Amino acid sequence: MKRLTWFMLPLVLFLGLAVFLFQGLYSNPKERESTAVSNAFPAFSLPDLMDESVIYDNSVFDGQITLINVWGVWCTTCAIELPYLESLKNQGYRVVGLYYDQDLDPDFGTKTIDRVRTEVVSTLSKFGDPYAFNIFDVYRNTSLDLGVTGAPETFLVDQEGVIRVHHLGDLNERVWRNKFAPVLAEIEPQTKASTTELGVKQ
Amino acid sequence: MNITASFLIKLCFLLVVATATSTVFAQDSNSSDVADDVAEKVSEAQKMGENYLFEDPNDRKTFLKLTAELRCPMCQNQNIADSDAMIAHDMRRKVYQLMLQGSSEQQVIDYMKERYGDFVHYQPPVTPVTIWLWALPVLFAVVMMGVFLMRRKVTPEENIEAKLAAANKLLKDD
Image (cartoon, rainbow over all chains, first blue to last red):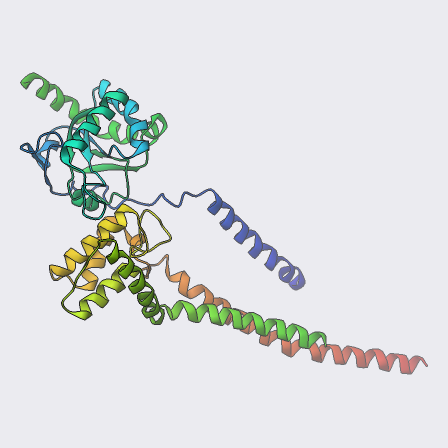
């Protein structure tokens, strides 16, 4: 009996290690818990990308469910997800861009705001324009507050201005079904009333 | 012969475990080496236009230590001093800004952890889950030591008695 235990022990240890390492093969190292979820959207006051005289703050979330999409023209994956985002817009969802540019920064060289705007317009006309408007995160401070690591990332913000979903990477049918739809089902009944209300007001 | 060989193998094993354990505990003393490495990298970055100037040389040291300890969330196996990802640039700038505003080292780390989670700091916090990182190697070393001591006592004595009995039996048969 004792011999059997001694014989089995390394085998059991080895199997344990093998299972542990095996599951590591299929785990996504980029996936980790977001610290932003269930926090209020960080306070901001930022200009519109197309018109710097328009300033947005957290009141943009009042009473509406909003998808905040972090993007930039320099980001290829962002361009690829534009058509899907546009289809969401056509389903009646409100998509707002949080735009940031790499080149408007002393670290990366300079690009004029006019050139950024021309590039944005041409990208959106080429791939589709899902955005109600674009907030320009000039120094990327809001992105940092949100825990953004790179574009594209999408946040679902509820009508109280609380972040409910934080998704890293592109948004597609599968991600929408698995990650966004369940949360939306949870918060949507309350919104339907408020969106119709707003629709009447407008 | 056999016993000596297995003894040596066990000894080697214990040594490996002991070294592994001590490296875990010695992380702090290594960070000054890391800071030296980083000093080189940062001076490179300065040539490329990133100038983070401090009046107090101690602040500069703290800045180098922080950028060496904070992990880039984009290129996950690099610290933010080492990485050229945009987020690493932004985080370095943020660390600098926070320090100029008078934040302490711990406050800067907490600021980043609030946004990017425990993941962003290379020193993991001790929690019920992570305590095993420290406990397991020690536990393993202790258990192996126990096993090793127990086995060494028992085997040789038994062998001698059995051999003696066998020899006596042979003598009697003759």
